Length: 141
Image (cartoon, rainbow, N blue to C red; front, side):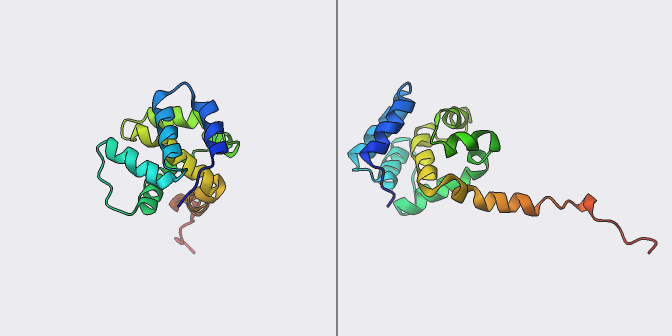
């Protein structure tokens, strides 16, 4: 279980006060005694999704599904500074992202540690720097 403290909820409220759906998500997290996965599952069901996994696995899988977007370099610095607004706007602009789940997904990423969460993608990017064009052919040798 990923636990969000009342102090953290208050901090997120101050950042996200302009969006009623973000406030609804934070209210639900608070109603669930800070249990982020439980709140995310309830929001998912409200949004018409039918999660087929345990709460903790489902939220993790959803966050990983969007890792490429969440870990974009232009937003990462904000997330590292616990600033959610730009990334929240970015996610909500994507037609396939379940908007009501943006708040729990981003809080989950923050609780995991942004660099820790993005590390598998960072490792992948390092390994893909070697493109086929960077290899010389053996012709004529």
